[in-house]
Picture 1 (spheres, rainbow over the protein chains, first blue to last red):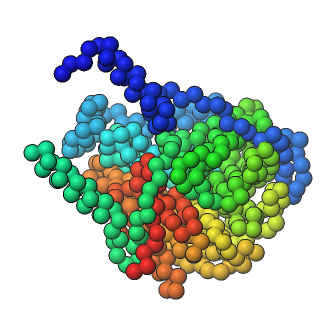
Picture 2: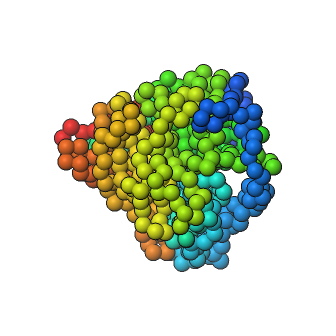
Picture 3: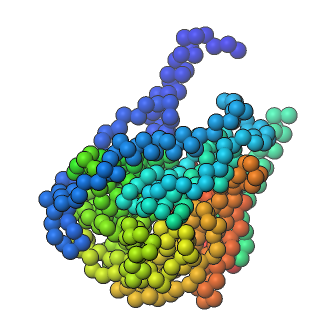
Length: 172
Length: 326
């Protein structure tokens, strides 16, 4: 039975309104979020108890700590993590998860670089992409000159297109 | 025909529900319901169960991460924007947030401003979210934090910036602070938990856990688990179950002393290795780890609420489990 266009429009609007009322999380419905409050009073101290006028007071400048430079390194790493196989999984195949072995999952990344720190990340975009894996970011404070990044071919979910794993390794 | 389909569906649903409730047997876990995670845990977001609530961290690598706290029914209790004046980027890692039962928060990480300055920090937020103390920790780098039942804050870390040949292995890896951020003491020399050359040091990827009368430190990289009394006295020290190098390890310490560990490995399509995970529980009298078989390909522990274990296999549901008495 084909619904008239007007009735169909009403049904869609009614459903969306109902979802909003129910508070059901729906990625299709834009969420208007108030900014969460932050502290009214922030005090900066050293472990001795000595107070600081600001958190960065007295710290030396370090050119490595440039936000632009770190962002560029992170972007470069994300490009290395992408699967650039010529046998790309199409949109629908990704969700149907056909049992096809994709030999081209990118070359494993041997341990290289410095100041990388890994963390648990997730790839919950549906279909075969569900679960967690290691991802890495550059951090000159938490990392050191010997903490590189590497991938042994592991990936999130059941196919490499879900995201290649990058974990911290030690190369010196 | 329709009636047959309804009957078959009802039978299958009942069978499935029964399966979920079944205890795998001996040192297993019994299902005790679930809670829908009221937030989409995607890249840049993570959650953990601490201090009786589920804490979700968004924008973990940004100038202003946001922490949202939910109760066991998925109801939002509070929301907090974490700021450090002048910060251009804050980095929060996996075991970098702790919540006390009174609602206060402890956060560790690194922070950079817009003019090439940076340092590591420990931040303490009051239960009402109005007061914040930020302790500058550098050159000490923190990797795990917990709030003990006496409201002291415990941090695991070390100074990672010394060249390998000049490392101070006498430095203590566990530090204890009061609610004003003052250092009260430190424990556990690095030399007692050294890892082989060219492997991650003991403090890295480690986890701090607290229960009613103790603090536990789980170090997957050094394969050590150490329990401390609240004054820092060592209560127990044992080896952990073996973990593959890049296993994603999570742990939970419950109020009755039950200790659980989860170890998840990603799949490898080229080598045709599926993702896998396993769980362990500590048998305290024998100090042995018992494997808990799990059918799912991936999972992790969010934490423990009293004696209820919070497990997820998809970041969409918190699955509650009680330890089986078998």
